[in-house]
Amino acid sequence: MRFIPSAFHGILDYAVAATLVFAPFILGFEGIALALAVAGGLGLFVYSLVTDYSISARKLLPFKAHLAIDFAAALVLVAAPFVFGFTGLERAFYLVIGIAVLVVVAVTDPTVESDTAARAA
Image (cartoon, rainbow, N blue to C red):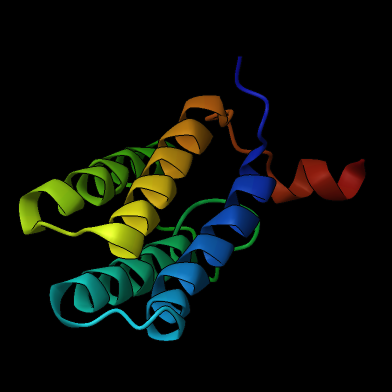
């Protein structure tokens, strides 16, 4: 059951990127917990800007490849607390974001509505 359209997925991408970049500062993360989240958020922002969907700057990365990167990144987020020994709020943050991204990838429709079709509707 894939019901999230690519345009809404894109909105979620930018929201998650902002969360990964800014929330760790607000939550007081330090060291690898801070660096990994910020790097992941910046990476997500950059590859979202070049994904072939309606709210990107350039359409260089196929949407299915974008979803594969999202999936891999989510696995890293889920694994990070165990690999790096995060506890408490850091562990919860990484697990919640990682699992949420896995769910979003699983329910996103991998087809992309063309800008021309969207304007004609």
